[in-house]
Image (cartoon, rainbow over all chains, first blue to last red; front, side, top):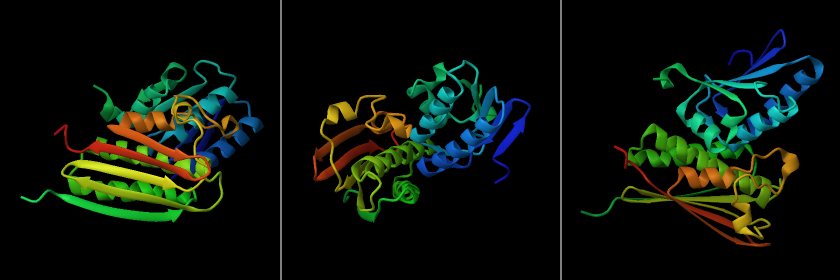
Amino acid sequence: MQEMYKLEGTVLTVVLPQDVDHPVTDLVRRETDHIINQNYIRKIVFDFTHTEFMDSSGVGLLMGRYRAMGMRKESIQAVGVSRHIDRLLHLSGLHRYIEIQKAEEEEA
Amino acid sequence: MKENTNEMILVFDSIPANEGLARVTAASFCTQLNPTLEEVADLKTAVSEAVTNCIIHGYEGKINKIEMKLQYHGNELYVHITDYGIGIMDIEKAMEPMYTSKPDHERSGMGFTFMEAFMDEIRVESQPGKGTTVHMKKTIGRKR
């Protein structure tokens, strides 16, 4: 797995692994919050391109970062989102607060 | 012809690393019914939610045993996940979307909602102080 955290200007990109579950989200949460506290970040992009599995802990992670970013619209973006993950984001109502870009093969 | 049936039981410690073990085992068992990718993804998420609940809520982080029983009859898959932890006082409340008994843990409160959304049926049995069993059912291969 390549680098998980990329900082470009005020945008932090978090490349998520294959499984986004409870042990993984605990780790990503700690690391992301550390970077947010050390840098001036305006936007966090969560990259789901490599993610095949997610459960409600992933929803908790995104919701929590949305709060940490001051609940600003457009402060959180999810990219490379598969159909399954898109369903989780919609069922939880998160799609109302964050920007979602589907994976290329999911569009059409 | 005799009906196609199978059953297995997996008992494991309530540590977060075993959430992956449980859902991969369930997915693998379900493969015998020739599921769609979507059905496997649904099952894995539901199992993960149920096992996470045992670890975080049932046992509150203490190490104990979780039992997962998997069965199928024809193309109906049954999943039963049991812990012997604190139990649930108010099952109806626990199942409400966004409800969480541990808001400080940054839980989404969507666990039961996802189980309900991704499985066809769910029933929760619980006795405070004795433990909780989540029974779930899903018909596999229906969308083919």
